[in-house]
Length: 207
Image (cartoon, rainbow, N blue to C red):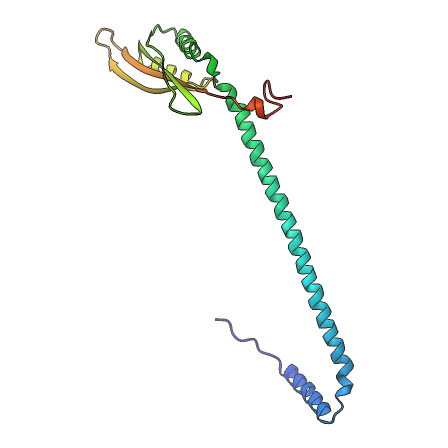
């Protein structure tokens, strides 16, 4: 707890003397001596109050304008970030018009690069979502753990949007060190691409 501030005795005495002088003058009826000073003090007080209020209003207005500019800048930054994300991601998804052969060609290319001959199943599609169609192909192959790890990395890290949704693995009974693996590779076909309609700087964008 802080100790109380001690007021010097000389200041106390000076204040007492001043109040006594004012009291004496008022009792003698010479209050007019203080009239001009009193009016001046009132005017100074009113002027200070007016100016202070005006200054506060002005500062509040300036703060409001600054907040509005900052909010606008934030909105613009968020818009540009969302726009750039759309421009970056949308080209990675295939067009709906190619859904009958795009995923098949991508899958064949993946296993050709890995020098693996797989057994491909039939493509299935899920159209339950109003925004996109999910297509997937089951693939059965025989390979080692190391080669299977490389294959997964190749699928997941491609520029095109491809994912391995699930897989099963069993030790081969015929070839030592080999595994019989079934994986499901899938992708998403947007039912409508919107970047080109929204932005001039998108590929094939509006004029």
